[in-house]
Amino acid sequence: MIFLADPQLIDPHTYPDRPWPLSTLTILHTDNYLKRSYILLQKSLHPDTIFFLGDLFDGGREWKTFHGNSEDPEWAAGQRPKKEQALVKTWRKKYGEDFWLKEYSRFGKIFFKHWNDGGADPGIGQRGRKIIASLPGNHDLGFGANVKIAVRNRFQAYFGDTNRVDVIGNHTFVSVDSVSLSASDVVQPGGNPQEIYGPVEEFLKNIQSLKRKAVARELRFQRGDVLELQQEHKVSGLETADFEHLPSLDPGEASHSFPTILLTHVPLYRDSGTPCGEFRERWPPTPPPPGQTQPVIPDERNAISLSRGYQYQNVLSYDNSFRLISTIEDVVHAFSGDDHDYCEIVHKDKENVREITVKSMSWAMGVRKPGFVMLSMWNPVDANGAPLGTHGGGHGAATSSGPTAASLESHLCLLPDQIGILIRYGVLVAVTLLVLLTRAVLTPFLGLTPFALPLNYSSYTSLLPTSSKDLPHHRSRSSEEAPHLSRSSNSSTSSTSSNNGTNLAPRNTSSRTRSVSPAPGGYGLPPSQARYLPPLIDNVKNAWKEDDELENFGSRGGIKVERYKVETKTLPLTKAQTAIREAWTSIWRVAWVVGWCYLYLARYG
Image (cartoon, rainbow, N blue to C red):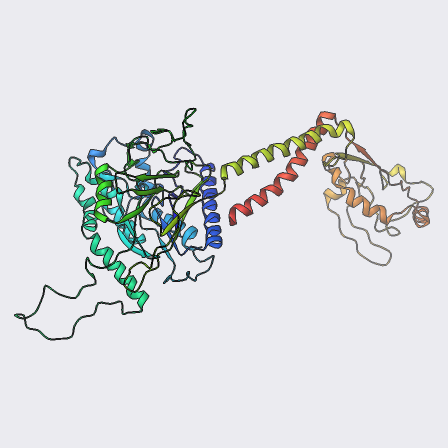
């Protein structure tokens, strides 16, 4: 079994001041981190069961429902933080049931979709694999008297009963909606807390019967018996019918029970300064003074603070904590969430129940190394549920162990330090830019081969006759003899024909008044467009090679043909200009490759 706590999908409630696109990138990378971690968890560990310990969403309590009142009560006015007070109207207008359904779909794409990535077959002795996400947190429903009934009804409709009993691995797991239970602590004027905590009270009232029924059903499954209730087939009159001894799925108080494990989102009460142990990341234990071997007690920095505020309370009240342990009975272990960091204590005043507060699995919840808790269970029993001998085993996180709950062992598993990864990427980007800039600066001084192409321009000489004075007077050549050569003429108004009768394309007025010379301004183009002529001139150059044929043609036509000359010159650049061009070219070439790789990885996670 694996416990996952506080994924708290990032939404507009998480960072209301974070602008686009930073907010979108935060959601993208957080979802990708959760998905990659979850897929790795499934493929590497292939758990039989996964329990979520609440706070599936960050702003789930804020998004209004289609039915029911989800507004804050009048007595709660002004309790919100100032930042939220300015945004409540916008949230109510912009985010509703449709938005919550999209968030539910988003949760499913991360966790439900990849449930079978490691295989669909359960482990030995299990009737099937389970994923249970019905335990609510204060970010899902609110806390105490601020819980909204309509929001809770929506949560239960999609995730299941918030109070439930499950038998897994011959252990009984009792999930309690502790955020609603906390409404019994304080009675708000004008409110109706009974409507909030009433279902939890009813569940706790019947918890012993529910536990026995769940165990009996599991034993019937293991024996291969019929799971349904068997009624005796006989006819009785109303006077003789026995209504006091009707068949029941409850085997009675004399039946065997399994070790009970309590699941709650909010941790149980403890004295102020109760240390959480060496595996707490943000605030490790205070080093003891010289000569002291025992941990420092009380240790305020290593402990969960006993504080509360709008829609949260770090621990349950003492009365509710004690009542849970005493009412549920036989509790050997408790698991909770909410704090985002790891904490492990033994409640000596509550029957020595060991409680582990599970780390958040999201890197956006204030811990550098997110994590989860893996629980291994071993409790062989006979057909009636009696334990089969004494079985060893330890219990605790990492290397810790304890004398209680020998039928299970827990282990803290850490996930990658995403913030550290981003820091290393940032350092790599800085080093890359430094290397490219250094090379760009050294290129003009050391004569290195540049990445940037040089800036060139070309000057072109005449190819065709530029004026009538270029034509020799002793001999002329008519257009019939050289039909493919156009001559400059301002008086010609009609097309010419060849001796064989072939008609040439007519020329309009604008074409007659343009110069045919490709000299500066080439073919009637302005000087600024002359740079685009090289392909045309190259074609002409190939057709008018300076060989015997060209000389013969020139002599036959009596036309003076100038040689084709192209002179390429490099624009002079200063060393500073060269370095700037080199830096831009090299950085751009690296940036677009890195950008495409980043977009691909971000898209497909």
